Length: 303
Ligand SMILES: [Zn+2]
Ligand SMILES: [Zn+2]
Image: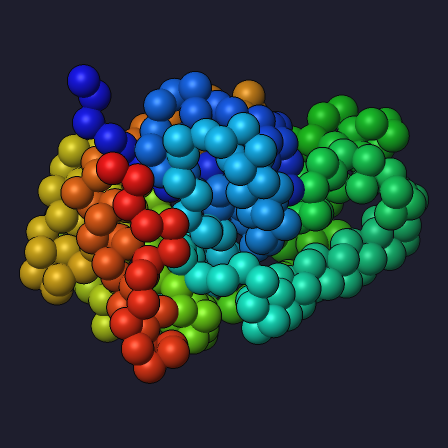
C-alpha cells in the first residue's frame, strides 16, 4: 500500500490555475493524497470552496490552509513564500490579500493609461476577460493586446510594452521577505521558501546556493520546499542538509496549474507523511505562540 503523502502546492482559477478549487479537490482525491493545500497566488479566495467541496463529498483529504505569497528581494529578485496553517478568515490576513488585490488593480489602471498613450487603447474589461480569478497580471494584459491585434502574440506584447523597462511597464508594490516572513508568523502560520531552484540556477556551486538560502534562515524562514518538479536531487540534498542543521521543516507539492504549462497535475509530486507531521507540529507551535498556548494543528492528522 502506498504510504500517505501530501500535495502542498497547487493553484486554482482563483489565481492562475485552470481548475476550480472544487476540481483541484477532486483531482487530489483521485490521486490519493491524504493532505492537500491550495496555495493560490496572493489570495485565499478558494480555500473555503475547497473545504466545502471536501465536506460535501466527505472525502478522505485533509486541507491545510495555504497561500503562495509574492515578495521581492534586492539580492534575489522575485521570491515566493508559501504560508501554511494560518486562519484565512483572520482580518489581518484578509486585509493583506485585499491590499495586494487593490495594488494589482491600481497597477493595471496605470498600465492601461500608458498603453492608451502608446496607441493601444484597452478597457479594463478587455483584460479581465482573460482573468479567471482575482490575480490580474501582465500576462492578462499581454493576452488582451494580442486579442485586439496590437501585437502578434503575448510574447511580443511583453517585448514591446510590458517587460521590465518597456514603455508600459509599471512596477508592483513590493513586499520584502523581511516583512513577509514575520507577517506570516503573526498570522500564526508557517513560512516555507517555495521552489528554491531559482537560487540554484544562478550559483555555480552548492556553497553559493547554501549561503543564499542561509540568509532566509536568518530572516526566520521555517523551511524549504524540497519536493517540487524543478528541484533536482542535488538541490534537495542541500536543502535537507540546511533543514537538519537549523531544525527546519520540509514541504513539497506539484505546483500544479491544471492544464496550463508543463507542470504535473495535482498529486504528481508529493511529500511524505513524516514531513507533513513535522509541518503540522510547526503550525501548532506557531499558532501556540500567537495565542500564548499550544493548540492542535488545524486539520489534524488523517492517518
Ligand atoms: Zn511560485
Ligand atoms: Zn506555485
